[in-house]
Image (cartoon, rainbow, N blue to C red; front, side):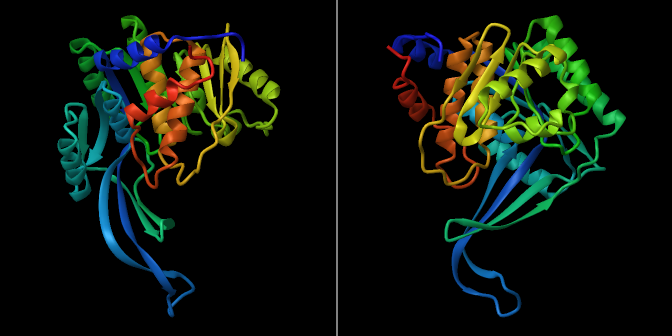
Length: 338
């Protein structure tokens, strides 16, 4: 890592400044449903474990988990998405109310089902996941209604950064991306993206682009060696220039992250942890990176802090938001902090 240092008080000030930020989050939302229990025997009907359920739980998932992370960091999230007019959609709105999250960016569609991921966890291990969803794009009318709503919110609220959280469930379309990025640029608002394969090449001109290694390989159609950091940086640099991106931040699981911009190309190694569940780690990484970008933080610090946050949430079972106090404590112990 190149010579870089930051004072502890500056880090504390960054964490305090998170509370001044309004974050617009556009993406596929869902309900994460959990059934927790114990496994004591195998079913006589089929070679599968029998889970004796001891607890049931429902949580906000997908882009809504990004909203929870942004909220946990002290900022104000405004979530924009489309849900179904169904029981699960009502359940989703109830969860928003319980978390004191705004519903003003949520549209309802009679033609869609609300996405639900049902996870069965036995003896602290995920046994099976059952998904209820549609992956078809929202209609042209729904896209236009969402663009109109987003434009209204950006025009009437102080928005400091926009996050696209793409889960390939059909909410984010090329037209939506283009219109929102154009409008954001006209207002001087940075745009940050957590992409998936389908729209990987549609995010031209965004400020920060954060794929993981699998998404990068699929998006570039290249079998890139995750251990060869120099090769990775070359591939990412080429893509960044082609797409007119300001910064690319690529997460590499246990290999850490790389950050790549015109002036900075660095690799930050992962911290050794006991990993329990990687679900939702990408949501946490983009949340931290977006807040740092809104505050125009140093890109090396942004990558290092995002890397820390992603690792912390992987120590928990299930999708959970970041703990701000724990993140600050670990941030103050980074090698380049003085």
